[in-house]
Image (cartoon, rainbow, N blue to C red; front, side):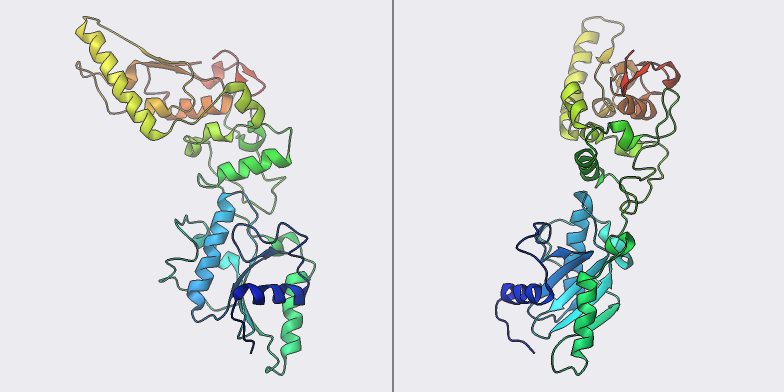
Length: 338
């Protein structure tokens, strides 16, 4: 057994012993983890008395990596420095837990999680007569040549992680557009099967998204524009509290109009995006009992936002321009007749 007092000392000795180039490779010590290397996430402890807690800490790190658009390592290694043992787990066996969102420090509040049995336990202490066999197996896991499926666990795209993966996509595919990333085959104006539905650049890293449309990402569409579109459109996400406050102001304006004897009114939003502002009007009525949203006329310039807008509130508003997707004049990702 070893006798480390400071975890960092044991970590560095382990790295040096197995040739992990932590000083030269900036991708190893990332995201507050103890190390990510060659398809492994490593979590060191001076002594592991509870595997459940330590594994749960590693799972929280993997959850955050998924959200940020980073590869999720296929293997979890928990290293007990003083007992000189490595516990190996498959990330895929904890896929559901990795796809959850966790708040707070990864090292806190880890009670209550139940881990399965490790896939392997390597005892590399010299008190084990087969310590060289165990050490050799650890080295192969850390340094061996692997295919992609042994390096990463493919993740599911959802509203928690899509922004991170979109930003990574635009960094790595500089000329890509929103359609290249988000495109679906439901459009009559244009039909593009995007990266999230048929992964090409991220093949093996993300699972194909099976949603027929992008309505699930309605609150995030502004965040999913490529950089050029963000600059061109000046598109910004409207947080829900702002939308609710705006609905209160619209109610006041409508009340004033009706009190002044107006018999009709419209609520015009020429830059409606995916309708976050209008969605806050759903359920609100004027003094005549009319739904406020039924007085809305909306439009938006970005094609994939238009598709979500139409699906989301197209049947609730007085008019959406263009009125149907078949009426869209599509031009380079934009609705030119919006």
